Image 1 (tube, protein in one colour):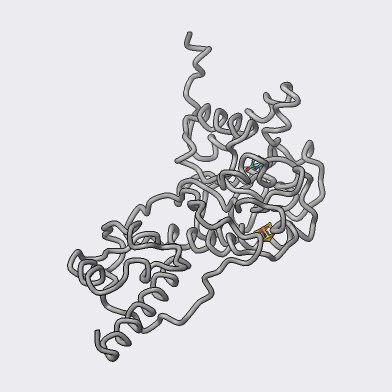
Image 2: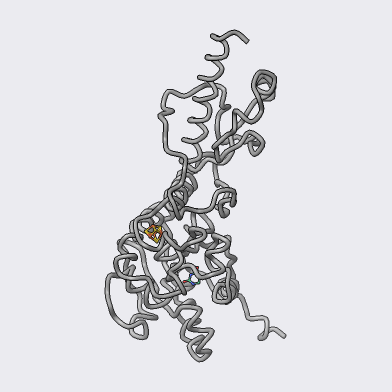
Length: 300
Ligand code: URA
Ligand code: SF4
């Protein structure tokens, strides 16, 4: 190949890499590549060259209506850092699932993915040092209910998904008892990284992480926030009232109604508190104009 053609190809590949990096940072996980363009690239360059150092590889791209073909090279492709700082989610581990957009380019999904990608590189507080995975949140991008917990535990830290351990399984059952599924609601935590040995997150760690929750709330616009436990309730509401006093009483987070209730981990330890938690969730359903389906035991 002539030197000029080689140089031109190198420039095109560089811009393509930068563009894919920028799309990844914006939360885009798929782009269209026309077969013709892929064949041209495949024929004219060594296969590894196009992908090196990128988190989006040509092999993971599949057709999507969401984004235009990569072929028109963008003017906005300024170089961005692609290497995560120490402690960021491990390379090669796939990002936890976020909902498919309700509509192409749904701003809530794009925004949530952007937050997830910023959180994955976040080192704003000491919790970044020992995390395995960040746990930004999961669920419906237009939920009626947003559940906010305290912070990821060991299972969540391993999987990058909130509420998948024992307490999470109880929460899932409670959501289902409300006549909903995890896909109907959004689940997140007041801190997005696991506190070592599941200790309570410190006030400065909560303060560092809260802006992400504020952004998520602004994008999700839930009708109700359920704050699970003292840490989530106090962090959201900016009070230090005991959870026993807070629970069951409607509060406000900006314009959004907040129902503080017990954390499912507390309910695992203290069965008796389940009645109160269920009463709190029924208040939530009532506010949404919903009713819980009859319980299976009651029907049997
Ligand atoms: N407990 C929480 O508060 N959040 C989780 O994601 C899991 C357990
Ligand atoms: Fe950043 Fe929040 Fe993780 Fe702290 S807990 S490192 S603020 S994402």
